[in-house]
Length: 472
Image (cartoon, rainbow, N blue to C red):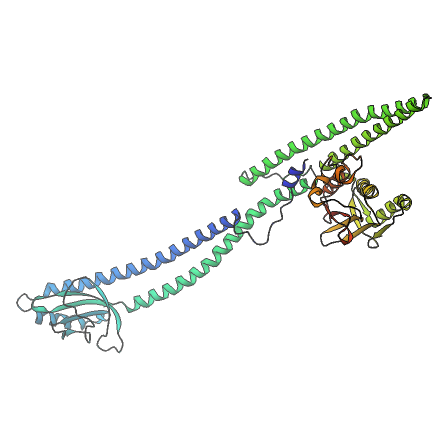
């Protein structure tokens, strides 16, 4: 599996707070707004319906009262007949909620049960809602009246008290506001539930891809028989992972065959050169054979290293991870290299805690540290420090010296395959040492950082190995 695919398959942690620009947030916001609009439309519609119904009933009553009075009014003397009819109508027991009045052109009450009209009512026949004081009442009340202009300038008022309707509508409005506030809370809750439901449906896919990104190519999204978009997504992901696993298996077979096809003839060539060297007596020929044998060994080492890099970058080898004491590993490596360093008059020190356990590929980590020490022996100067630190989320394993170091603009090249820095540092290396270190860090889910050595002099190479458990 190449590094780009590995990066794409990294586990994606679910955030506690939904990012404002995410699709999940937009969907949650849509659910919230739809719930809110539906609740507001229902409550406002209910209030408008109640208001319209009450108004229609009041207008119908006012029209009936007006029509009844006008029907019995005398054409020759409408004022007196209307006044008598109004008094007779108001004397009935069932007339407590009605309002009747006959008003002259000067606004004086001729007959009726109101103290005085609050506005001039000399024109128009449209019903109006006014605050009027009825006789026998201390306070004004909301009253719907229908004014009708009569001959001679008189105005007939017929209507009904709608104060109770007004109070009821006020209660409905307050209840609607309270219900709307509750609807906001419920809509927000529904939006959060919807967003988390989406996240939970995706969680299995995210966990699966995270496991695959950590090297467990056998992980698959659990089957889902719902048939929805999430189930289809899981099926497509599983098909893609099946293809990735097949390609990775083909890569393993290819690298194994390549290793066999290249290493076998190189090994035979080296053995043949050994035999030839033992048979020749001419010194020049023996020296030429020795040089050829050295080149053969160098090519064989390059093939081994290149194959190790390819396998590590493909995530092959995690099944060999074992819980290892890194401190003990560094001490063992230090003991091996101390004699070589003593010959150069240099020292090797280890800065580490007493013990630090981490699941690693012991052979590859050992090889990576060995490559770093070989580099500092060839190109570095001064004392060498092997350090091990326990950071918050990673273990930092570093090798530093006080040599010429690597210029910042050449460090990325130094980490690439065959990234030789001969012009800057000399030597005949193949340029695979640091590339192998990066591949080993990649296999462990970590990174490699090149920096300055102590005091800004030399080179410090740091392997950052995550503490999280890697699936295999």
